[in-house]
Image 1 (cartoon, rainbow, N blue to C red):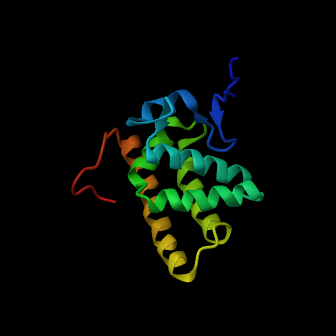
Image 2: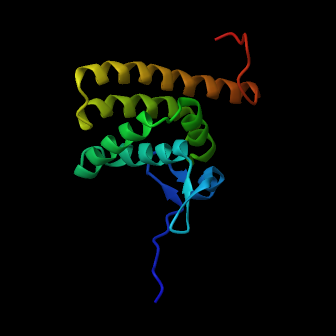
Length: 151
């Protein structure tokens, strides 16, 4: 008996994450029952795509709680933004706005307390700035971080 596995070539109607591009972000040290798993940052990118699409649903609230847990377990702004920029089928210039929307949705949907709301407000600034920085690097043709770059 074979199991039919649903296949989606794009994840999310806003981010349109290319599943083929996401395969570059497989964690070589992590397999679950023979399945390859995405890196933490790539997994966060897929959760952001889900949250942006279904934030007004119970699944969206679940996505928000899972997203907070993933970010708190070590997700990085630089890594997630790099995944989003390299795998989105949508306009890359929209990524900072998608980060803003994501971090506006998280506090209420995930039920964050006052302390965590402050921390996530700070994270929002960091992630939005990282998205803007990586976009500037792309447009300047610079491959990565540079010291002393004017902003």
